[in-house]
Image 1 (cartoon, helix red, strand yellow):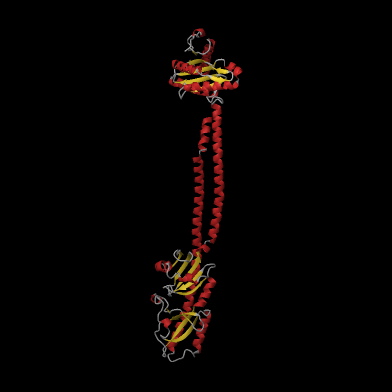
Image 2: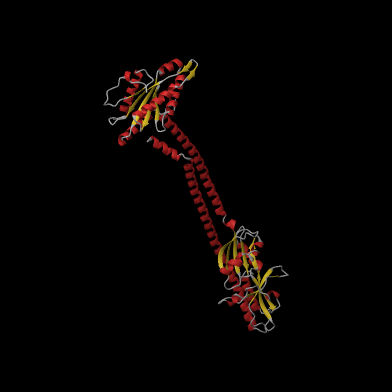
Length: 498
């Protein structure tokens, strides 16, 4: 049970196990963090898209109402021209009051001018796509010219006319001049800050009105993906513009192509501004994850050191429990436990098993005469010599004092006696120099073989001890084999050296 506990601790104390568990925990933590950041970013973009699309829809409705009002004014003026072919529009008070009231209701969005048909060059080359609305069912019959600057006021206007079917008798034509700067001013009050923009463009990308901190930002859209890729596929959408080749920032864009006018409403928001909340949340999330990662790493490192220390201490305790402190051979407790296991195995499988007890002759005299330091050297020398004569599977133990024990699995008594003689001969060659001269010594050995009648290790060890006593009584420095329980006890005087 103790060995299993020690082995279990050692397995958990392996660096690979601790590192693997730590990496798995950190990987799971950061996978959750990254997934949450990605989902939160997508949610932020989706929320920004909904907000931009709502603003785009509101501006689209506002723009349509403004140009429908302008269409109404031009239609009324056209009807007056048709009904009064010989009248003078400049002097007709009723027409002037109608035009002024409609212009005032639009917030000075436009002005009505009476021009000779075909004299305004801005109306001769209308922006591409100006006829598109005329071909749609229910669409307006307005035609848009090129933006032009009024020399008197330096304000930019967009000329808008209805196709001339019945001109005035004097060749005059009603033209609505849309004040693009007033339109831009209205957009500026609605745009998102900072970094946001609102623009009104023609289908070919011509900027008609805009409200933006960077005026080049809207102009760059004409040659970008919005007009080349997105607008031809969908008349209205929310997209992310990432023009890396340009110098402008990443943008969130919502656009709508008006179905009854050749106009495109675009609402822009800076990507970083729109995701500022997500970036702050992401920063705190990352800091929180780091706040977990760093302590977890420190705890794992300290746990690794603690487990390794615990494993080392467990090994040391195991060594203390199973080995002799001085000689390094097995302890008496470990020897007896191993002998019990081998004896049980022998009884199940009917295998031979032998045990030997070795005792250093006159060891107490060595300690008393030369000192315990020399006695320790003698013990070490005996252990080293005995191990040199044993197999890897044999077990050598110190029983205490100058007595050792040897366990010989799968060994009959005859083979055990040969091993005992080999050990005795090796020990007899040992010479330990001291200040008081050379110390030489011998050992007496008692050997015993396990029998079927052995009930416990005590029976086997008792016979080996009796054989050892017989060897000592016969004059020491000899090997004596214990006889089985069925044989009579040997006469020590008749037992010779082996």
